Image (cartoon, each protein chain N blue to C red):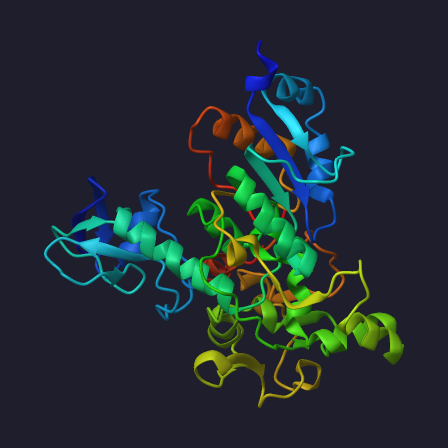
Length: 179
Length: 237
């Protein structure tokens, strides 16, 4: 097999709890099949800092909660052929977006109490990213090709969507939010 | 009693005089999506999910409110109906604050199941994130307005089956909400009998038992039918 010609698969982690990536690891021995079928070129599970060019499939976990997420998601979209919203936070905002019910200042005050900290976080020093006023879903920011709901999506559903996209087929639907 | 014969999705189905298309379809094992209709309660035609096509009529009809008639040809599952139902479910999800993962009925919610059945894997609209309240003043029950879709099942169960009419709807449009008595805290209600029929009839996690953790509350509105049958037959098990 020409290793260089394998499809390039990336996974990314924005504003989420990493539960979707834990579920990805639950692929267990199927990870070996996946590694044979695709070149896993970027992931929070690997020590690579920069999202690479020419990615075929990107699974993006988490909602867009700060300016770093916004920048990273745009980079991921520009460099990926197929972008999959990976899990409920990416698809619906989910728990990450529950803060949208309240003004950001109130959230910071409730979390930190200290007005000095709240002021500092409103215009944080580098490299702390500024929080967005409202948490966004992936498709609020970029075009999303496929949606995989679930909190987290099951390992089976992750395997199915990757397998389908690799084969150029429409992934199976009927997945529940939550669960 | 006269019986009508009609065609639903290419199948010949019989319906008793006065029976709705929804009831006739369900008797024949044909599934029509619905969130507000419950067998044994009056039908408000609120959710619009059971809309069907009837040959010769240019308007869609709510199956829960339209009586089956002789020779009627009904289609419950067309691409246009499917698209409309998806749209309705997406609007419901965008209108309230529905966070399945932290909900008491996660896994058992009718709205959640229907979204999956209709292949709603994301919501195309911008969510409203409305500021809504939670009433935890009742000793055993909670009312989370964030999860309410205003189907009014609870209002009808309380009025028509329990006879208490503690629950009702106040406000109009996007300010509409379920209230107890004259919009007082539920725990202060003098009319509430504490029977819990509202909680069991609610299709989402809006009404819940206070001691239940997330994803551990199953509901079944089928008990309404059993109560009505028991009252009619005078059989109480």
